[in-house]
Amino acid sequence: MTTERVVVGGAVCQGGRLLAARRSAPPALAGRWELPGGKVEDGETPERALARELREELGVEVVVGERIPGEWVLRPGYVLQVWTARLVSGEPQPLQDHDELRWLLPGEEPQVDWLDQDRPAVAEAMRRLVATAGIPGVRSA
Image: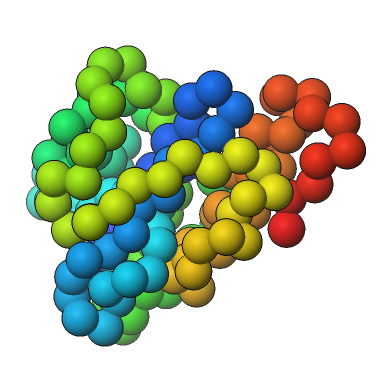
């Protein structure tokens, strides 16, 4: 049994684009971009936590999809796990912890300053977008 606390991130995709969220807090992370999400609460599955966090932070309902392989240390005792997610209802708004949202096409992800721990999952999410959309000549970074 792991003693690490799981933080979930959502690779929210719609129309061949990935949703990026700019942190507004805490000060050490403010201005950097991430895949939105949050901590898994006691008794909650990571998938349910992600759906709840996206509802609270962005005001949207999602269907949680596949887990992106990997796990990234955020700080001692906390690890990030990322799942794909598809919007079911709502238009994402920066309600909590973020001050800006941006939809990025494959190849546009270098335009924002991602948190280091999110970069591998972002790269994989973009790779999947390209593969499913069949966009010729587009490579993710």
